Length: 343
Ligand code: NDP
Ligand code: HSE
Image (tube, protein in one colour):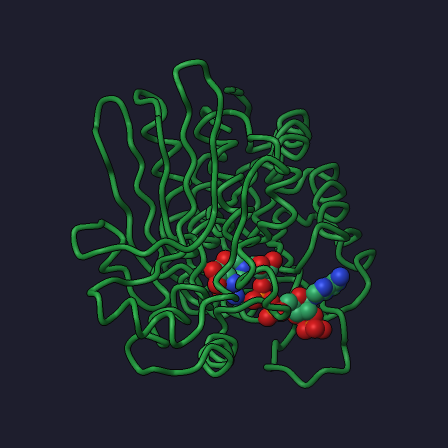
């Protein structure tokens, strides 16, 4: 749906030179946002005509040793954040559905634009969040929720203006693909490969969702909501992870010239019914996902006019993820003079 509004109001008019933002969560992604905002401060100021100031950071444990953030309030109390006078943007990079959903609802109600990386929360609450944002005249950025640094959300939004999507197939979890690649290339055992993915900032703090397929499933549901304007019934979708694949399985596949890939796919039939599945597949050299290695994700979009469009790139990690969140910010600010919002 489309909505015309004048976002200058929510930025306090053109006279205001500084945008005040808060970051919820200061782990891999939150720190990446902070670093990029600082590195790109002057460039963003020049291109957008406004300065972005990180006013506050929300964490769980204020006593934890972490990088210095001079002049920034670091708190474990969301009330300190939501009561910042003139707060305009909230970057959300915490985990789980709650309290993230509640925090974003409150931020929207206050008139803040919100930019989230939290796919567990967003896959469930994208519709009420969009409705809330629409009624309040603010934007939601969620590029980072799906496929990390791969710009699949903005690509989909753009092509859906003319094309329709029939099928989406992809590798949507960087940790799983990294583990499968390490097991095959280096014969590195599953647990050691997972540990590497955690050390590199790819895996979730609790990697259950990564290796059980649930993370890829949530991302597929976000793509479904955007591409088909609905999701299949979650319980009808068979979701299998990579946690049952042994080094011996990977070795045998390699001998046959095959590779394990963790594939998420969804298709709409002519009656509008959606069929989705998430799980490992053995693919040969002629399969488009065969060459996708390491932390990379790939998303193939089958469309009526373009044909098949495939996007490939880093699906997890500090800078790929944080950079698309700052891009969302730049896009939102760019629209503030009052154009069309597509949700
Ligand atoms: P981390 O575990 O590295 O960091 C999470 C941060 O959130 C920590 O700073 C933690 O505080 C804080 N936090 C967690 N729960 C709460 C809470 N209830 N209240 C306040 N603060 C809280 O996670 P990531 O940075 O890796 O991921 C953040 C989000 O981004 C997740 O939703 C994840 O799924 C998503 N994401 C991650 C990607 C990645 O590559 N890592 C890529 C795309 C999305 P404290 O530091 O005190 O523990
Ligand atoms: N843990 C996730 C992954 C992060 O490995 O894909 C990106 O959403």
